[in-house]
Amino acid sequence: MFNQLDVLETIDMIEREHLDIRTITMGISLLPCVRGSGKETAQAVYDTVCEKAKDIVRVAGQLAGEYGIPIVNKRVSVTPVSLICAAFPQDAPLIGRALDRAADELGIDFLGGYSALVHKGMADYEEAFIRSIPELLASTERVCSSVNIGSSKSGINMDAVRLMGEVVKQTAERTKDRDGLGCAKLVVFANAVEDNPFMAGAFHGVGESGTVINVGVSGPGVVKHALENIPDANLNDAAEMIKRTAFKITRAGQLIAKEAAKRLNAEFGIVDLSLAPTPVMGDSVAHILEELGLECVGGHGTTAALAMLNDAVKKGGVMASSHVGGLSGAFIPVSEDIGMIEAAQKGLLHIDKLEAMTAVCSVGLDMIAIPGKTPATTIAAIIADEAAIGMINNKTTAVRVIPVPGKDVGDSVEFGGLLGRAPIMPVNPTDSSRFVLRGGRIPAPIHSNKN
Image 1: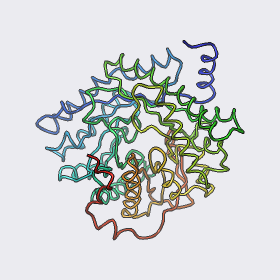
Image 2: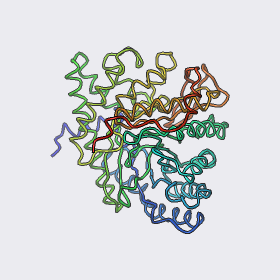
Image 3: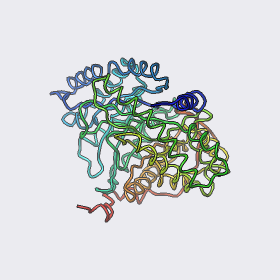
Image 4: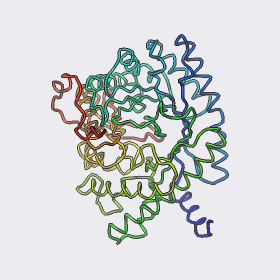
């Protein structure tokens, strides 16, 4: 039973502290859509997505009105498309464009799942599919793509890593009229999860039910405000405050997720505990870390503060939901977090520090603008480094970098909306090509042998 104080506290979280349901994402299996040709499969995909998700925007609006909690994004994720077009990989773009039409018809913001899973090996049809990604992202508005190139059980597929370095560069070039915006819809994973509600990396795993609702709740501003009330507390008490706040935030997500699943005739999947920032002032993960005592995010102590934040969010959130999943942690996307943007502009936050931070948070090197002249092999090496952190630490890591055509360090880029803006960050100029071009597979770590 809620008392009056609980009600007033929740209203304050929503009105002043940016509490929201960041996304309701419906996962849809496309396996029943496979037909004898790419054209027939594309039509079946379009029909299925439009039918299954036809009410997602309406229901989200209803729930936001009834419970008074803003629901920012309505999204769909689907079975990795490379699996359903294996017999006709040349027709993968037909399916991708059908998904884009469905997303437009539904009025959702993004649709994830133009994806491939090649963490141990890469069949011919998968390579052909991956090579179609740049053209597809350049010719669609709402479809997002991801590729899983490594895991703690299988190691890192360096042939796929090399290919993804090339794909990122090609995607940037094909969308150079939009400052490489296509790369904002492309994520390279290690240990990708099957129930991630956040874009651009969401896809619907083959181990999932036919139709599932996953919800991502976000409240960096709520956490920061809670810490502002205890400015002189030690870190034990700060962690306890974060735990309690995460519990309240996640409880709201559990309520919305279960009710959405019921109304949409889908199964309740998970609540993702991630603190996902936006470029809006008061909605920054970086500012939480600074509230803990850092002069500026990126300084010494940043990784320790982030580790504490991430752990406390998980401890508080896991008690508030019957099913916690997705990525669940604190996101550090540079262009989407006003505090990260400010630190990068001051030259106090660098890619090397961000890489260290990804060892203790969710998910990886995210929304980082780099010089357009950066070689594909250097991008591949960045991907390999991040995948190694995920592989060794048995966690999900990812890379979403944007080599902005025609721009260099000192310039900046404006993507708009939730994608924000970013300064072009410097990249280590050393040559990694000989390492990347060796190919093969980096073996899985010894702790992978747990059977």
